[in-house]
Image (cartoon, rainbow, N blue to C red; front, side):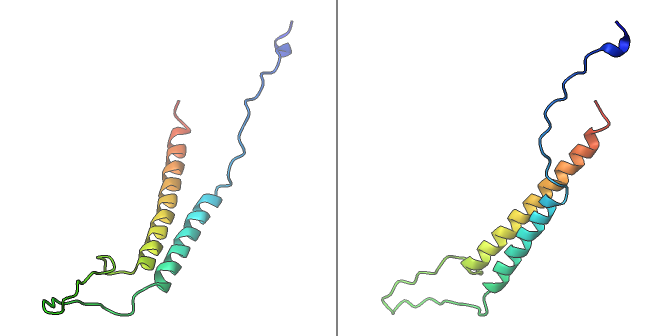
Length: 102
């Protein structure tokens, strides 16, 4: 037998790769949606409360934050977008750094 008659090895199954621009664009889109939600739910007033011992009513606040719940949701969505972008940047940096070393 000649050297060229060696049977070819089967190539391992390769997963379909996500195009390189899809994940960062998704992260930016999530961030923009979060910015829009936070901007559209911003407070246009500053609230205050005072101690009123003779009113015979119990004062309860709607949460103890200076921003509205809608703005909090918008900021949380923005953080999710930033996490997607950070994951993608770390993934790409790791792939680039490990490609030449074995």
